[in-house]
Length: 427
Image (cartoon, rainbow, N blue to C red):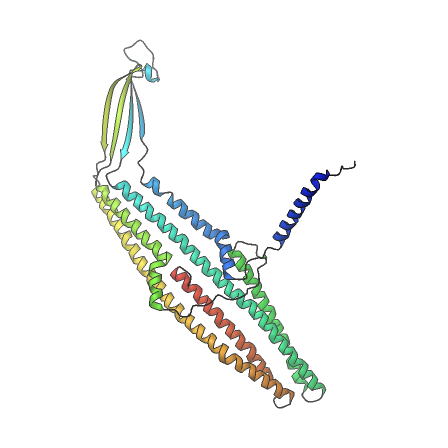
């Protein structure tokens, strides 16, 4: 069956729809993957990492416990049917309220002792704030892992690039040695050693490429992406702060570290619970009202007051000692945590400064010296003034110094990520 063509008035709209669909598909296919810088990875992890999402949801759940903690207990309804056998009357047993001797309805509202509801609400509020800071601590930990993984990804990528460049230098040396061997100026051993060195460097390149693949898989795991999902090539490392002051950073750690804040709020919750346990020395109450139905009308009204009798004082004293011990344990735990974090901060700052000094030394002195030494050795070898071992050692020194500079710059990035994790914010 032949299809009828579209009406002419629909053709422009169809063309526009087709063009828009093509543009959308093209944009989707050309979407740049994350990985070019740390910010792209952090933005993706903030919205996709399941561990951080779970911590935020747990914080939301803890926040929803505040209102119920301070609410009154639900009232109770009690219905008592009196004389259901209808003894003394010309009627059979019954369970309908209007067909028994009388029916008593009692509505009871439990009332905790004054101040208990407020303490429960404050304890739940402190616990909710602690959960929120725990979620923040989860993010700072995740961010540090992402920053560390990116720095290692950058190191692996640059190491592959540098190794390929050194391999090209080695190929040039091999060509020179072959040319000089063909002219009878050097022994065959020079050619063989050049070939062996190329093979060893090719093996090292394979190991570096494998490490690069593993790091990409680890980054994708942090981002909740497939392990083989593509990542953009890293462009540059983050800029480093000019200088780090230990006293200033110690104060920022004490004020802003989310783990310390969460532990302090746990102490506050334990203190409120301790006050609440102390109030259990006093009775709780219950008020009630009781209309009594006889046949189809209310014959009388009653009111009721109940209270608990706190007789088990030995048990309550033990509960109070337990609550106070939990407060003291929380304070001790916070002191231990703060001492540990301050020690980590001092170690990381010193290591950061050492990495920066090492990077500067390698960049300004050793790398230029290695380049000059290689050029001089190459020229001298071509002129027959030095042996092949001297040239090979000069070539190795270039690769070693450049990789050491790269390692020093990445080590500074790793220390910076740890410092930011400890103080709870970016520098």
